Length: 342
Image (cartoon, rainbow, N blue to C red; front, side, top):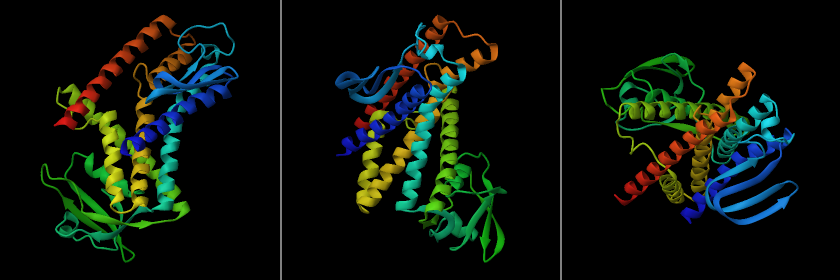
């Protein structure tokens, strides 16, 4: 059951990404040769118009194959013969749709199970919050004079700032109270507060918007942290998870949620799906060869210098990037399996 749920999650995220490329290609008059979900041998295929729609054996990817995408073509409907802005739309659309999916899922979670507000519902015993005097009923409005819009922003500030001292601004009985909080070196930065949950449509939309922003920020900060460790030749095996690890995480979230009820289990899976979709969107826009972000950089050069990069040179650059990405993916999968066995 857990593997089926994980495969369904992967398939939805990939479908939305590739559908973004597909729909914007069609909107810009670009001919799509094949729209596929999954990789490997075809399980099912049907041609409609100029496009072959196919379902392939392995749900670990997918593609929207456009004519003239990786080679020159005389066809006026080819990707390579469209303007820079049209091609940018198509390349950007996959990641954009992943961000939209993440946002929509966050809204659904907020409407159905509620979203975390900035109001403190409970202060955990023996926590940092209880020591410094944060009280139930307080509303956290700022940290170090940075105004807060989402509960998740508190975690980001605590996790990704190098300082250990914070000024927590609280709204208490209509007055602003500033509370100093200081963590020891290597102490886990947790306040120990539980937020009040709320359910309403407009609030869910607002909270989803800010949560999307801070999840993107969290992903970027995490990537910065991982690259810094890699450049310092430090191990990142514990921090990195690939398909095998993600399947395990989805299954764990579903199983943990079932203990509290099916609604919580579904909510957990939806949240993880939102996070994975946003993560895919952000990573795909990284300016690395073979990723959409790398292709967008090439388009930017073409737009600035009014001359396309030599297709052979661009092909070599993207092939090199693809080989590196596949090698990295293989290493991550092996790492997943090692962690699973151990």
